[in-house]
Amino acid sequence: MRNSVLIPIAVFLTMTAANSQQYKGDTQSVDSIIGALYASMSGDREASRDWNRFKNLFAEDAALRSIPNPLKDIASVAVRNANEFVEQSGAWIRENGFVELEIHRLVEGYGPVLHVWSTYKWSTAAGRLKPEPEWTYGINSLQLLNDGNRWWIINATWTDVSIEHPLPEKYLHGALREEEQFNQKNR
Image 1: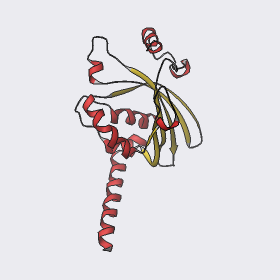
Image 2 (image 1 turned 90 degrees about the horizontal axis):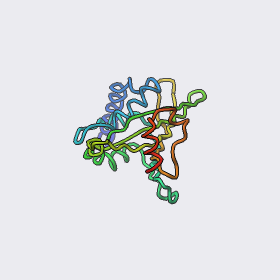
Image 3 (image 1 turned 90 degrees about the vertical axis):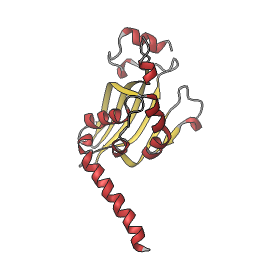
Image 4 (image 1 turned 180 degrees about the horizontal axis):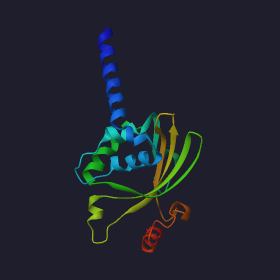
C-alpha cells in the first residue's frame, strides 16, 4: 500500500522538476514570463498548445480571474487555477485559433513583488481572416513574485474593453493607431 502511494508522488515530482527545467528560460525575467504567457495560449486553429508550459508559469495556488464586461455582480467573476483554466478553456482556444498579443505594458513593483498591467488584443482565426481583421482589446492585471530563483505569476485577472470602460491612455501609451482607438470606443 505504501509503495502505491509513494510511486505516483515520485512520478509527479519528477515530472514537475522536468517541466521546470524545460521551461526555465520562460521564468528568468519579466519579459520572458509575459512573453511565454501570451505564446503558450496563442496559435492557429487546431494547433496544439503547450499547456505544461502555460501551467509552469503560475504558482500552485495562483488565481486566474476572468471579469465579464459589463460586470453584473461578483458571482459572475470566474475564478480558476491554471489546471482548471486549461480544462475549461483549452479546447475552445485550440478549436477557434485564439491568438492574444501584448500591445503595451506598465510595470510597478517593490522588492520581489511586481504588478504588471499588460494591454492586449485578441482574435480568433475567423476574426483574423475577415477583410478588416477583428480584434478585441483588454487588459491583464498580473501579480508576479520572484522567489530568488525565478518569476511566478501569483494572480492573473483580465477583462475586455467595453464602451463603459475604455482603456485610459496610460495603458495604451500610443500603442493603438487612431482608427483602432475609434473602433475600441465605439464597440
